Length: 453
Image (tube, rainbow, N blue to C red; front, side):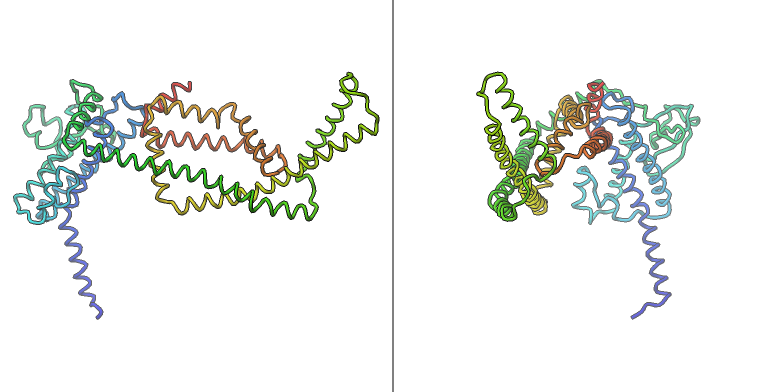
């Protein structure tokens, strides 16, 4: 049965009304999430202390990133708390506020969240507001010379000017203020501690280790790490051994006999490319010069022209058999390598779960290295593949691949490859350092730059 236009209008108005009634809940949750994000950055990168651009643990680019993130989250808190207070002036906060905990601190209340009375709901509201206050308190600046914008951490909001308040003003406890210079939040304020942040982080780790449940957590993590290591090493061996065994089996039992049969039956040419032919001619010419040299210095008896021709003919037959086998081997390598690539691709496609585990294992290994070890590996990798002497290495590799596949040596292609691929690889590597390593381990990047200078 089709609904009438009036019913659709009523339904739409009802949905708008519901959305408006949920405004306090939505605003508070978004401000709370922003505060949680700030707290996560503090705990993970600043030892639980305030985010400051004076921290000696990170470089300037990393601190700029943290500062921009702080500005973003503080502006979210400011906007959402104004929205929370403005909408709460007209509405009752819905019962769902506080029923969706975001942290372990509020998770204890989630079990009884469905049957909270008004008093309990109000306590949860104030609990979240107190958490927001505790997060943004580190960034309060009471300078009178600069305009400040309130970031609200209490139920009611009042925009205050520093000219109307003093540090001893008791009303200041109901609102928190963040200093803004030209639209940016000032993060130069840093809470002074009696102990260094690194020492406080060490003490926090010691406290966690003394936790009665820490032993079970350590055992669990060790077992997970052990299983991950075993699976990763097994998968690495699988990726190496299966293609190699496939290559040898296919070359010796499938591709080899087939190539020998068809090339022997059709009386195929000895040389698969011009480079092999020139190489054989040079060897035959050198053999002839060697015979003449041995005769001239008296190390070999003088040979007649007929005997010399017989020895040269025998050497030519020997070289023909050698280069025929090499040409056959190049053709066999092409088909055997193709079958190996198919086997490798089949392993990749059918073991996606193992690939994820291997990726996690490699991340743990790489990012678990010390800063000096990371810098050493980075310099070694860059010098070998994209450094000053890398073109010689790439030239040897390309010549070996060409000979393995029986392809003629193309100097123009080799020079073009050397002029482009290492440059692309160097760009990708620098982007990885800037995009990922600079965030996860900025001290390793600083060590790398100092060692590379």
